[in-house]
Length: 127
Image (cartoon, rainbow, N blue to C red):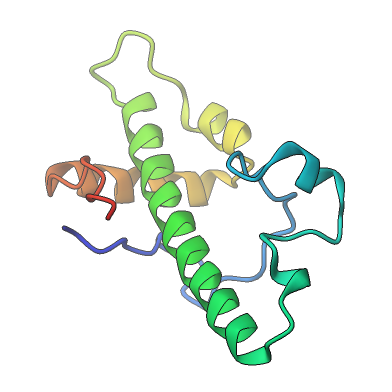
């Protein structure tokens, strides 16, 4: 099982927080998402030790999910810009679709190409 890899940062510095609206969490019950105070039952936990443990588990899981989703973004960008495809997209189009700069899109394409060359196209087993 391969560990998720962080996406390249074209600035060469720590990534700045992105100001994008969060993706809907599809596995959370619809009635729970209607209540803005509800977040995976954390609001109802009274034991601070249990709350810390569960919140930490969620933080680690979300970071891993974000890293893995970024890998798939990179591979998709590499595939969409592949010059061997008759329907390839220009880098500017990929950047626009993903809300990236063209420079960042180029880094993501290169990252995706490296992932595909290394065989990282298969998601790890989930236990």
